[in-house]
Length: 356
Image (tube, rainbow, N blue to C red; front, side):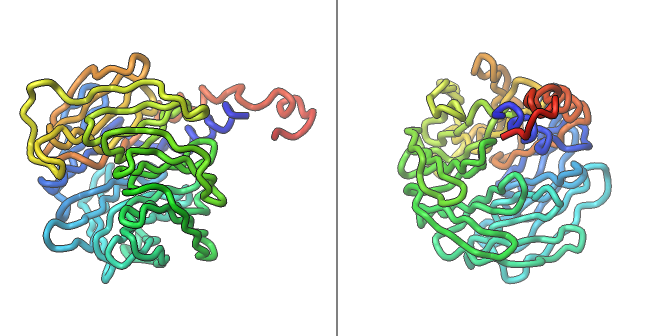
């Protein structure tokens, strides 16, 4: 059953259309770069509003939406980029300022956090407007993750050190403690909710219904983001101060590897943690054994071999990379479908009874 669940998750995560590109939001440069997944070549550059912080790709793979957080002046907009051509479109969020976390639901609804005002927004990208605002309360609602069916949203709150569960149909809200500086958040293939607590140097694993803490994992050095490999086996945590990628077994929670992301003697740019490598965004390639990490202080992507857990390449970016997304290739979805062939339980294939 675990293999079947991981396969369904992989299929849902693989866009139907794309050119095999890594999308990189460069916060200080106010741009998004499109890099070839073959060799990191820059294929295109799109100007955005101030401080692009996160990127989400639509389920059909044709649109990338960027949250524009703002620099000194709070941002209140998103930019929609047509990946198959066409001019970018601005989406005005009105009174909802400091947009940050972004996630697409499987049905094409886009959800965005707005830190100033404590809201989670449902955005109609085609119409270019906010369709509904959910209150998540004070405490700096920063990042958002969605359940696989798109029925539930989970929001991490940095100042409150908590995680919020929002029923997107009825708007019911549940909030429970996570850890000091709760920031990165993702839903694992088994449905559990993982939160990186940057001030506590921990990762907490939560029950998706009650938000009770199932496990607390040490991850020293300012854990700031969490993602999962496409096969669902590994959790990937970037530790910004330590400049490492911590790898955990997604089922047993045991540590698997720690990958050093900084280079000795390297001169890094000034960051929120001083002159440092400051890795932030992390994403796994859906078709190759690779993980990409945005090294914000080095203006580069660290390419990590996820079989050996070693940095094998470094690709240049614009100034202060952070947000990452992948516009997956059609072959990636075909490969996902092939990998899932035969994953259905034997009893279900023979019609002997329902699968658990």
